[in-house]
Image (cartoon, rainbow, N blue to C red):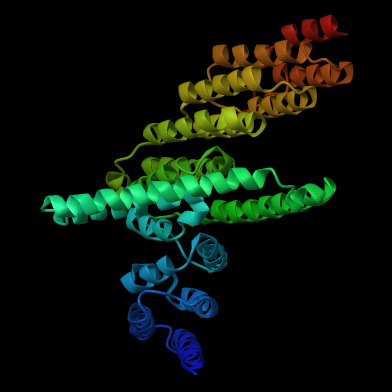
Length: 433
């Protein structure tokens, strides 16, 4: 009867949270009041949540997101509620949280504080289980050390008792180890199973985990696009804090999240460039210049290129085009050089080489403000790499594309060609034919 009463009480609290969130969207204190009541009930139950109540707790965590949006993460009791779930339960709730957030309109992560609060709650999506629990273990360890210092044995009798307990534990460990050795001589039930059965189940679990991980990280990439602030300096600081968290998530996660960080940063650079070139006084508030922001993007691209070189080359090219639009020809040339370096060191598949060279040619055709000497060096590299392709059809097609870099490079703003070299073009075509 007590269990039923507790279930009814928690379900009633969940419904009250839903009611307050939907009927009083501007009254955040109503939702906060019910969250505090639920937390007090958990504290009254020795800080334990029965398995039958986990579903109610998950629903309570998801209910106020639509109405309170990012404000709900500022409620201390709300952040404490999720700590009573285990890693997998938190992971599922976090996925539903982010899915709800990215579907909302006009929601932006505007400050580093908001990013810290949100990322502090969704650590199962940012780190592996061992990484996410390491911080809590460290805090517990420090607390435990303090308690041990306070409760040290004050006399020899207490010390002897501690030694006796330690020897008993060691004896138990040895006995259990011996039992395992004895059991190993007996045939286990797993040996009678077929070899295909367990392997198939393991493969199915792995595929399911990979699909879940893939969907989670795509949600995290969408979350990055919520980072926005009218103040470009604050936007950059917020993006920098997000980069710090995503960089600690491991190589497997950065493949999904780093491209989103790059494109968010490139959009910020373009917006900052427009502000600086504006005639009003808005550029007086801009202290973080595009050159500094390009350093931030450069570091991300440098890390990402070695993990996913095919996409890494394309991201380098996007950075180069963004620098060219900002009339930063030296930075554009450096990004192009890094893209070629990434291609030469990491891209080995012939089909990928063909596709990458097509991207190189297309990017160079879009360049408008680079010095002619640097442009000539880059298009010469395209020709050299095209000649080295293994498949003859790919080689012929890319050389034909490279020919456009010697005559079809007319500027959008001028009637004459910026980098055309007709005499070399005809000589180039004669040699290749």
